[in-house]
Length: 81
Image (cartoon, rainbow, N blue to C red; front, side):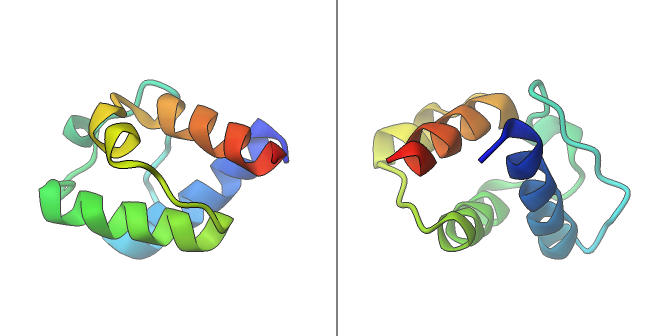
């Protein structure tokens, strides 16, 4: 899976979760950059991402992700297995 493929899937997840297809994700995107991305929505995103990619994040990964780029890195690493 390429980084572009991961981003394509994440865009679909974000667009669906926030009902906003104008969201454009980058490695530096954080919750502060997306309207309505609060702690509850973060949980919904994590669950949707886990389902889409067939992975499960550890609690440390979930609390340690500082931006979308770190999330992509974890997804790519997990999908190599």
